[in-house]
Image (cartoon, rainbow, N blue to C red; front, side, top):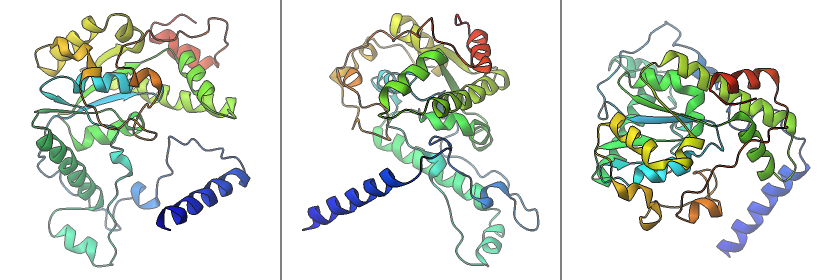
Length: 290
């Protein structure tokens, strides 16, 4: 009976989605609540609390750019823990009583810093459970909030994973049953703008491309290991022999390609496809032909 009830509830939700008007906002960019854009009424901003994980690693990328492949390669290292997408940006703290903010202020905390402490604890817990000493979060929408991640962890390390924007558009289009081409181009542009912003603002970030990762994985992973301060291990290239957890929607790529356990060549962008001017400009800045 429980299984039947869950099935009926899920079908009802899918039916509601099917008959509702199409969404024009980007799925990857959640609406911010008003509280997330405002300081407290008295302008109080809490100081940064000590972190349990001082230098986590964040992979910044667009969706459909090979971040799951990069995750499993890194997770195959004996010292690197790269779990599924953690979506920290959607983990919030709510102060349910009017006096709660005052109580937290007496502890040198506000809502944003409470969220940062919680995020840090989640990373530390996952790292402790793994027995490793470097943690990597590869959630693509982290790209959209990278300034906040940098504010939370000033010593964080960033890996920028680029892919030809035209190939990203093609990949998203092919995976959606009824693709909205305008919305897809806008979504890809949103990611590309934040990636370029991070590329300009984070001179110490390590930049790689999905095309290079699939064409010469040893060279690229050796460079990544040097950036992370760990010795390169050949086992990284044979990720299929290790357990990387569940592959399912919302937690990363779940396609047959990633499940194969083999590094496969990147699909190239259609050279005849036209990109919007700004996307073409960004592709050119990243060294791609347009």
